[in-house]
Length: 437
Image 1: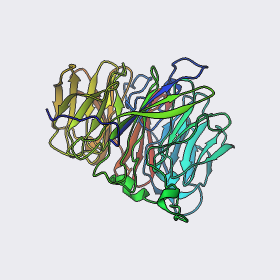
Image 2 (image 1 turned 180 degrees about the vertical axis):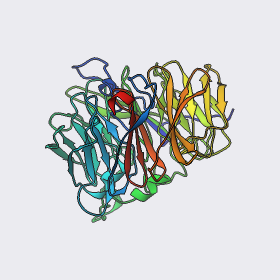
Image 3 (image 1 turned 90 degrees about the vertical axis):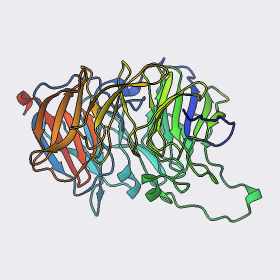
């Protein structure tokens, strides 16, 4: 196995150890039901707290009028929030799960169209735009807006309920979700210009480099979604620093209280080709998983950054694995070019539990609490939704997605086991139990 060096400077997936400063224990704000974050929860696990549905049936489809670039967020009450790159009118939408009716919509700056709105336990949402992060209540009323440097990636929560917002420029914001005020000084993962760099330096526009976030480069230092271990408040995010030829894994520590501060502890800069997927945490928080530029899956110790093992997939990927509570890792591809593979982390390596060479999902699997994987695959006539049993990978059902067009860009699971799909062509598709149709 190739070694991964650790240094005290630049690297590839950022880790924050955040010490809770009073208040709320170690609850995951995103664990109250639904699919409230981009990858469901604080771990980025792509797993839900709801059980699956025995017989998925077409529920409703809503066109948004523009391309969609990220999954929908689903609150515990079933409210579906999604963004789209529309030419005019609204680009942030909220729909009712039961009927598909639009509850509210508004228009924000263009960068919102790459971001998944994140919901809290009472269906307030948090979403970024060019140069700011905003919060709306479930009725669409704006609660606050906080100016930031760059455009936020999809947000997360710390164990004490603070909102963690990292922008694509690498600015780290720890925010009070009630007021929108900072709870700690800003921390910049990428150094900002100082007097020593000269005077009257031009300020980069808040949307500078956003197109580079789809492939990753120095122009978009942070291109992925942070992952948070709510038991320890360690946080992981990929970072590409100036002068580096790849992104790196960086360890930071946040200490709350009157003298709250974020400091850097360690970094792991030498994964081949850098870290290219959103990091995903094991259920016990001891391991972080990330793919490198060659597609190899790495498992690293979250306390030290030491590599535990690597597993070569033979192909690059833009998707991190779905990781279940019992340590099953599901690997797929965004474009339907790779078989669905289930790995088991044995501590020193990864064993292939099963592989479906005849099932090549488009996008990440969405995993239910009772051991099923919802995936989008090729059907007899266009795309279809399939349900697999995680015990052996067997397909238990398949439902056509007609007349939906466009490949999926995100999947999620509703509070009653609904399968929610967003497509690049701008559709929101919901499948659910027959009795609720």
